Image (cartoon, rainbow, N blue to C red; front, side, top):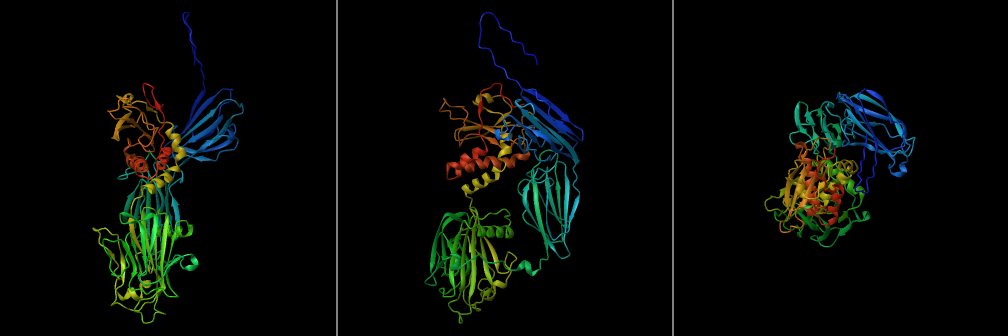
Amino acid sequence: MYIRFVSGLANSRTGFNLTWISSCLETFKSDSGIIQTPASTGVSRECVFIIEQPSGYFVQLEFLGFHLGSDGDHCKKAFVEVRDGGFQGSPLLGQRYCGNKLPPVLPSSQNMMWIRYVTDGSDPKTGFRANYTTTKITCDRVVLRADRGTFTSLLYPNNYPDMMNCSWEIKAEPNHVIELTFDTFMLEGPGQCPYDWVEIHDGATLLGKFCGSTGPNVVKSSSNTVTVTFRTDSIISDKGFTANYIAYDPFSDELTSQPELYPYGKDKGDDRVYDKHDKVRRLRLKVGFPVGNKLCRNLYIANKGLVSFGKRDFGKHFKLNKSRPMICTYNSDINAPGRNGGLYFQLYETDGEVLRKASSQIQEFTEHKEYSASLVLVVTWDHVTHLESPNPASEQATVQLALISDGRRSFGVVYYKRGEMNWPDLKNRPLIIGFSDGQEDHEPVYSPYCNTSEAFTGMDKIKGNTGRLGMWVYTIGDKSSPDKQCRDWRKRNSAKKKDRLVGFSRLPDCPCNSRFLWGNWRFSHSRDGNNVRCFRMTVGKSRQLAPYGKECCYAWNRGQWSSFGQFISDPPHAGSATAFNPAFWSLQSDYQREDRQAHDVCCYNTTKDGFCKAFYRLRPVGKCSSRIPFSFCE
């Protein structure tokens, strides 16, 4: 580099101050080799090493020597960062490393690796030496014959490789079936799954093709063979999946036995409902309980074997009311609790063991495989008798209801305790079992065992809709709580905050005024509202910024010309970085869910301003720029 400075005789000015950094760039294409930083010359230096291999191979980097300043200075003087791909915007492997401790062995998920080394030149010993090797990615057909097991996509929890065709065949014993569950599922998507996808076959029957972040529900086969096929394309990858399976005999007694009831009784700290046989106890829930499409805060527990929501019901009419939400577990003429029995209840919001039990049951017996209970109300009618029972000392029944909620979806789990359903056959008397969500356009759901001999004498011997004896699950409600939705989004996205902030730092600044965007093809008009006009980043010069995007928003109230067109930097109307750029068709669904809808829920629908602030911490606004011409970072 040659710099020439010329001054005239007429006038003088302050001049200029110049700083520089020595840079180097090297590409490695052999299948293995040594990477070593150049000797320190006492000046700042930045070097980039790119390892490029043929498609179908991945790279593994092992550090042999490492001396990069001190990790106590937060990697300010010297550091190295390694990225999974061939660009600076590729995902970071591990973290930014410095100090004298050797970093771990770092594997890529594709055929390229990008390494950046930076030093301020203050330490002449600074540098590293590393060895890289390449391995051909293979994904042979795997046959799994054990009764239970777990398998994952290649390289999990790192991103899966490109151009993969993998399969797992689960073979059980004859007359056995297989239950397959995906614990995590994060693939490129969405739509008809043209890019990366998982296919599941039950024997020769195709059960479905899946992609994106919504995996299959629990898969229960009808044959003794399940095949999982996983294919990927050559562009964008994600974490992949983890799956577990169990093979079993569907007629085994072990699989139909009743699980243990929730804890109950005075010695467990339960409250008790006393007095008359038609007594009702009101319970107020501050957070509410989803019932149908509403959020109910008042629950009424009745001696007569039911719980009603919103409005009190004594259960005297022995029928489900379509306009009144209620769940009848064993609604009949139950006698007042005696010395040996009682109506007990307890609300659990912090008891980890009870919440885990409830979460596990909903995950096992419904399609909600990531359900996490935040509230459980356990109601137990313990050793209760019928008013017309000729032998109340021996003709008793124990029924338990667990009302479970995660703040959005709610369920009722009903137990008819094994060996303790001993009422006489009073089929000429009413006994109601079922549920009504209180919506006029929905008919109440009655159990087929209402008013039958089986209901009076043997509900514990009947296999419920869970497949277990004397155990039933009812879907109670699905009322979306914006606060809950925003908390879930924040929890889901916080795990990726560090890597995403690095990617966001590569995005261009927004222009400080919308007029700078006129004629600039790199941004396009995206939406209007609240006297705001927003523009979003298009594809740009290359895919090196993918999958990230950006939205810039401006004041658009023509009645206030002083601020018209000015960049908005404050919540809730400011634009922000986006984790997914909708300019890529394959990312549009993820953008709507994780960026656009998440912003609207957290900033417009929640009960506290803190939710919106939390959104912008994970999707920063960034600065604006007055530089013209406006362009992307190279």
